[in-house]
Image (cartoon, rainbow, N blue to C red; front, side, top):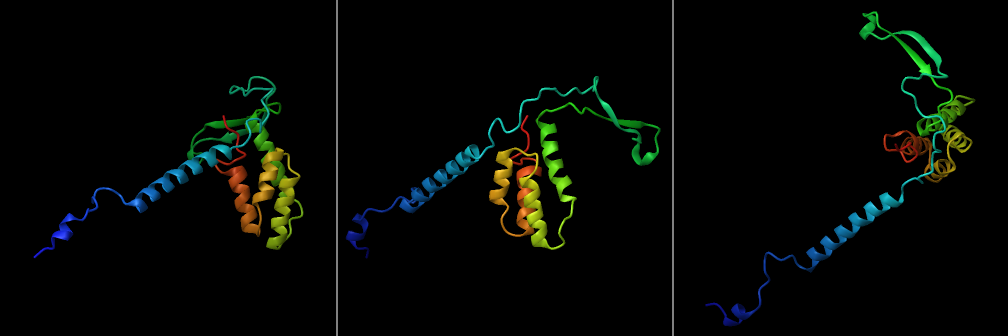
Length: 171
C-alpha cells in the first residue's frame, strides 16, 4: 500500500529543465554572444588598405602593358583562341596593394633560404617583418607565428592567404 506522505510530496515537472539545464542554456547563449562579439571586435581596421587613387578599369583602356601575349586559350591547345594578359602598373586598389604585400614576402623568401626548419621559420618571420604589408598585418603575424615552421606557415596562410584572411582586402 502506498504511503500517503509520498503522494503529498511536490513532484518535479518532467518538462521543465532543472537548474543545471537552465545554467547550461545561459552559458551557451553567453558563449555564443562572446564568440560573435570577439569575431566582430577582431576585425582589421577599416583603413588597413589605402583607398585607390587609380581605379580598376576592366577594359584596361589606358596605360596598360602587355604582360604575356598569344597564350593558347583553348582546352588542351586544340582551339585557335589566343589570350593576351595586360597589366596596369598604376592600379593601386586594395587588391593591388595586397598583391604587392604578398609578393614582397615571396620575393624575400626566394633569397638565401636556410635548409633547416627552424631557420626557414625565422626566415619567413623576417620576410614578413620587412615586407610591404601594412603594420597591423605584420604585427598580427609576429604575434601569432610562434613555434616551429608549421606554426609560421599556418599563421601566414591564416593572416594573408585564406579566402577570409584577416589581411585580405574586403570589397
